Length: 214
Image (tube, rainbow, N blue to C red):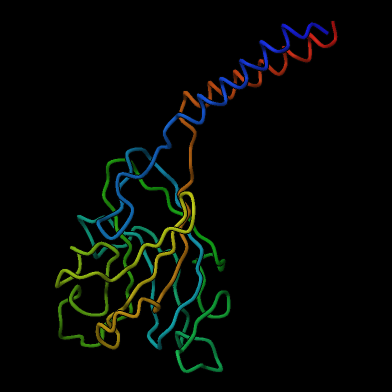
């Protein structure tokens, strides 16, 4: 084996790995209570975690510019809106009470680039005489709520992963942020430069194997 040449190739791999580490991760322009907006089309996975409260709620994705018209339902509670037998907190679990439209505890949505979105938690109207957007609905984006208020906490759980905990208006703004809780994971797509770097690493590994056979 030619150790000098092999060392050179290994150095090339190490350099490639360092270059990959230096490539900045493509992150969301916004992903929090200020809105949801990506600089490229991005898929986000959602998992239902738990709900608490006797109101039957539905979580949907909406465009910020059209906040009352759901684009897709992520999860919804079946009647009565909590597990039976009920607990003091009217606890809801999946798949017993809450599921995606396909009956799963997981769902996903692809957000188009440069479009601002929000998550809508609709717990039903308590007073049918009130406007459709003034009662029973809260949005993950503060400024979409009337009045402007924080109704969802985005808590980082790791790389590209967040817990989103809602406080509904079912029993008034108690700000407990445990009425409807989901986990969201932003799918990371490698940059073209990163893919090229991975190709370089694969190529140099092939070169090493060939040299070892010589």
